[in-house]
Length: 326
Length: 289
Figure 1 (cartoon, rainbow over the protein chains, first blue to last red):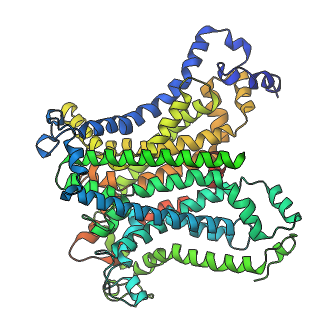
Figure 2 (cartoon, each protein chain N blue to C red):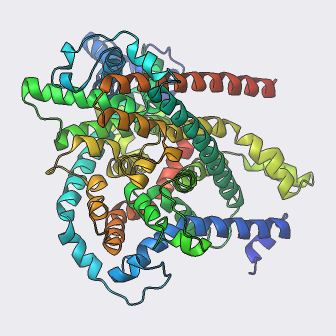
Figure 3 (cartoon, rainbow over the protein chains, first blue to last red):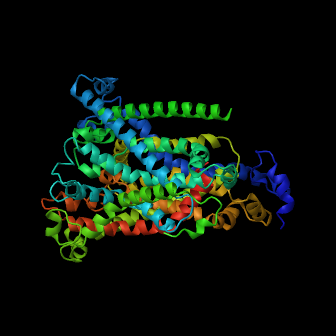
């Protein structure tokens, strides 16, 4: 093992000398310069594509929100006249139809998100904890639970749409009713059910990975002290999952709040009012009226709201964690 | 059910726990599998069965829908488009993520934190926020330079590779960091360049992580709907949009819809279930920290 004698100095070296190469290499200046630039070169493709597809369009989107970008200017949107804050004013004018619909859509999305994230987390954490210990059929069950996550969204949601049909669907046949599920007020419950079905396996996956990082000694110590399994779950497992939960709940919240696929596939064009999520609402009002300026203003408002919630969430959870450590 | 393996452990779980486990896991399994059963059973039903009241058992067994799906809708073309787009996006995304993750896990450099935070924060943007501008950018690039990104597979590949990139980079950073540095330092001593060390030592040691990332990237691209529905035209349409063609006509061929759903799901579900243990391992090593 030739590496043994270089390992010790390399590990403790100053951060400015990357990879801790052997001394004879470091004397050659061109190699050193090349090495200094190498990390940037390696990052370049990732940065370039993220800039092109995410960051530039986002900046453009923010600019668009201040323009009167209707169908007349699509071909050459640089010529569209500036609208100042007009697009925003219309979006938050809750007395006028456009603003009122946006506000309604916002509240629908909030209740949908709280329900979906709550149920998904609950199902995920129950399954992960109950499957922590080995038993017969555990591997198979794990595959079963992960199947909804692996199924392509369109295939799965079309199947749910079939199950929710009024005349030939499974749901009405089981419940013995003949109500509509994909239009009217029931649409909200149909949407939430499908979203939970699609989302909870991800929570399960993350929590399962999180459980594997809890040291076995903790449980051994607890069981020597006479703690039963329920106590161990409450005193060891749940507190140890805290860091995973912090990230998981945030990610679930962002994904669910921005969910477009589920309502789009379940309802097609024009979601029912009761299930009019913000993403769908913006999409419809942009592509049906071809008023991209107004759609962009709504998107910017959505982004600001998500940023605000994320910031508050991170501050609160980090403070809570610090308090618990102290 | 005899529980001999557990009886050996000092703390066999009490009956209350065992019964909770049985009930909760059974209910969750039923919930997870219900649509899969609907898909499977309806795909072998004659059309009349799927138009009348729901029945759990097909009145007669037929494989006809699996033959018809290819003719009702140009499914083979959509399948090919999805395969090209998802395949290319996966390969590009994984290669780019390997480079980026290697840089972050093995080098100290200015702007490292900015890079990781920026790339992760792109995950939180609502797709709808950059859909409209990206659509306009693609259309305008096309008008000015003649490079057709809007409506082409290339535009979709570009878009999809950036969707999986943040998570891939994040997970590979964790995975690469768990590989002992001595290994690539030994390679450097032996005269490999940094890229030699990456490809001869780090990449082979990280195969499980890379496989997991590739599965994730492929699934992301295979299942994406929003951009597929806006950025494609008749020749480049992918499965995500094409599958709706069975359901928007006056007559909905539900048995064919279910058969087609099953056919397009098999590649990703099989791949995912075969490789899921790598995904859990990758998450444990990297992401969940």
